[in-house]
Length: 167
Image (cartoon, rainbow, N blue to C red; front, side, top):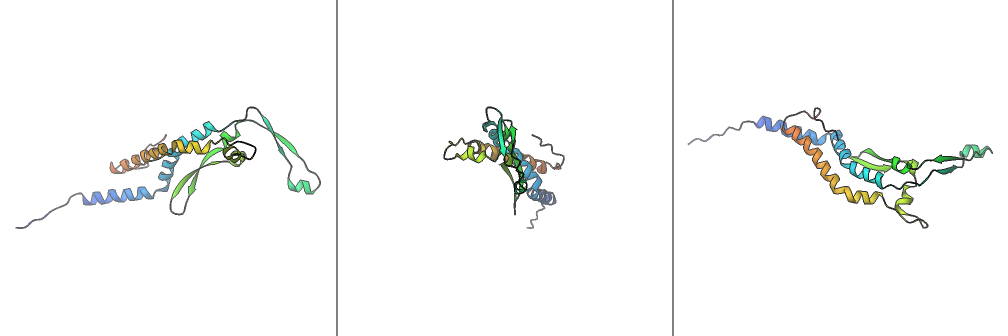
């Protein structure tokens, strides 16, 4: 008695597995999924960021060079409320073996740490950590949802470039 088996589609299976492997190595798609996932956290931080009630002046001492020359030009600048909200941003991070997205506050609103953590004379008003704690599970689910679309596109033999994954 002679038994023989013939497996069909092995070449197709191998090519699809190779496509899935290249999908995992495509940093741009992973970063796009991370950007999509981090959006609720960023939106909540911007929503909860405290805003000054009215315009205020910020005072500058002038440059060190002008002070050395004996011509210090101190100045003041009128600042409109909302600088902290506008300073919340996301940035692509290139790590050694992976990619990431960081949420950060731009230097213009350097005072965020005093608001978030407080000072000896100012009570802390946290707005970053509560937003992260509230939306971290949702962000993970959004990442899974976006990456699932990429995997389904590979399985259904669509090109990833033609996949429309806009928010």
